[in-house]
Amino acid sequence: METAAPKKATWTESIRHFFTSAKFLIYMGHALSTWGDRMWNFAVAVFLVELYGNSLLLTAVYGLVVAGSVLLLGANIGNWVDRNPRLKVAQTSLLVQNSCVITCGVLLMLVFHFKVQLVELYNGWILTVCYILVISIANVANLASTATSITIQRDWVVVVAGQDSSSLADMNATVRIIDQLTNILAPMLVGQIMAFGSHFVGCGFISGWNLASMSVEYGLLWKVYQKTPALALKAGHKEQQHELKQLSPHKDCENGQSPEESSQPLMDASPPGAVDPGQAAGCCGAASRPLRTFRAGWVAYYKQDIFLAGMSLAFLYMTVLGFDCITTGFAYTQGLNGSILSLLMGASAISGICGTVAFTWIRRKCGLIRTGFISGTAQLCCLLLCVSSVFAPGSPFDLSVSPFQDLYAHLMGQQSLPEAEHSLGAAFHTNATTPPPPAHEPPPLQSYMSVSLLFAGVIAARVGLWSFDLTVTQLIQENVIESERGVINGVQNSMNYLLDLLHFIMVILAPNPEAFGLLVIISVSFVAMGHAMYFRFAFKSLGSRLFLCCSPEQKAETDASPPTTV
Image 1 (cartoon, rainbow, N blue to C red):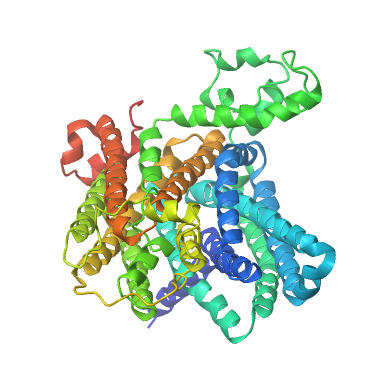
Image 2 (cartoon, rainbow, N blue to C red; image 1 turned 135 degrees about the vertical axis):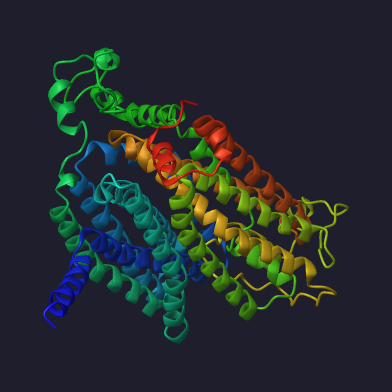
């Protein structure tokens, strides 16, 4: 009896310590932030479709603006993250993101309520201005969300985990599980609110959610910052302001300078307010700074040891084998109804969660680099089912039908409006959970073998996909120096968006179901090329040891040693 009390006190104390730890507070803040993001990303596409008379034009424009903005500004966003204190970056991006979503929500409420009057006012130009404002403000919110993701998931998590690689892997996996759950539950909630209420009520709910969660997230960030003193110290941040007052720009690369000092600041060799002799007026220098930042960021990304690993992850975005409207729209043409698609999406989420759990287990057994190799091999093997589905019974694949037939017919004015909207929506309406209904019900299939193999491969491949994604994420976290973390992750996001945009363009060029098999083969080819890049990275890092099982001591040694320069 005397020894039971201390055990109980120790157990309750450990529970209390976990719920007040910096890790748990980061999980809570990330859950609130991601929940708001997923609700808004789902709802804004629906709102834009509703506003423009059930046309997907505004949704397409919004998708292009978002992808293009991150592609062009990713390096600049990362550079801003690197050059400013962590707390300032996190709080500023949080306030900007939520304020923009709240502003968009209020503006959309006004447009929904006064749409009839706005259409008649100045021949509808006021309504057009409202559309432009909604897309522009929503794009700013997405850029702020990108900054938040870089600073919290790619920087704060690393600092909170300390030097413990296992702790970092567990935190990354937990954050990804939160992403998976919110990606399903948040759209379901806001979809039910809009279905049983109205779009006006949905806008108000999202605005109110972001207003309430913003203050909670702000407080959680402050608590994490207080509990983790290391967040207040940013490598090279103080040194750069002191030393760059005495050094000219060309001295940044002298041999006696440390890597952190030589990379701070990565984009600007002179402190704020200093005059660069090579520049003319201040306006010209300010105008050219984003371009120099863009170029220097991509050059720095190319010079990283983990360049091939990052490129391999980006190549996985060039695929139609995901649960967006492209794949689900094709499944609808193959006779699958919304109920079956929702079950398949749930199975995909469970598979993704299994992948995050598998990542932590495989990393402990085989090491981080081998985990990526094993995960990539597993994903590629599962995707072979998708390739086999192209030639299985029931497949609509037909090389005699030109993949550009629908595009040519639309350009020549021969395609009906509902069909044109359906093709365009499949390419850009990525945030919806169900595809827009076609003009007529698809005919019943003779065999479901093809579509069954397709989704079996897609769902099974999610295990390897998410495990591989976590591997590359941790490789970037551990191998990029602290002073360049923001800009490298910003360029990585740009690369992801670039390949994602290319796969949208690929679908626009070949939107008919008969060409989907060709898109599947191209997608698997890009995935294979991505994993081939990772194999080269892993082999240059470990050599022949890549194929050998290792003991925990050898695993720790290989994880701690940086990869050889690519």
